[in-house]
Image 1 (cartoon, helix red, strand yellow):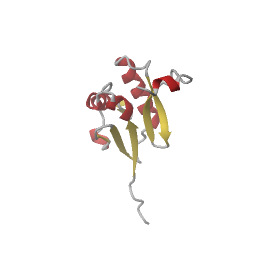
Image 2 (spheres, rainbow, N blue to C red):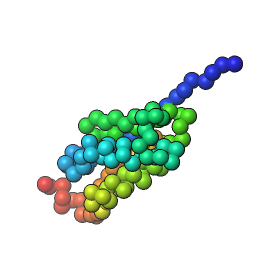
Image 3 (cartoon, rainbow, N blue to C red):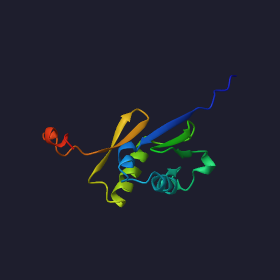
Image 4 (tube, rainbow, N blue to C red):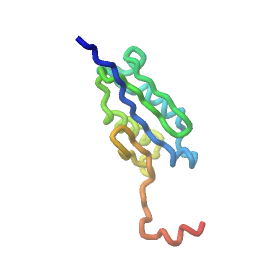
Length: 120
């Protein structure tokens, strides 16, 4: 018998736009995710299942082994809850940028009036 390699799944949350505008604190967002992510129905269960959350200046990377059931949808749910708690939900939205990544973007409110605002 040949044993299969244990792989891992990486999820990325890209917070570039709000961090550049100093609207969102990535360190606080990372702490929120560490406190709230559920594994096997229990919060605070990250270490025992070797799920890691790392960050650089504008991105959070969540790495989970493939043998642990970890849904990407949970990250979107927690991101939206964090934005609501910080009262940023009216300005930012969470968009799936690719199969394994989410991106925080601003709502495009004035889509037709782009010519006048470009002069700034």
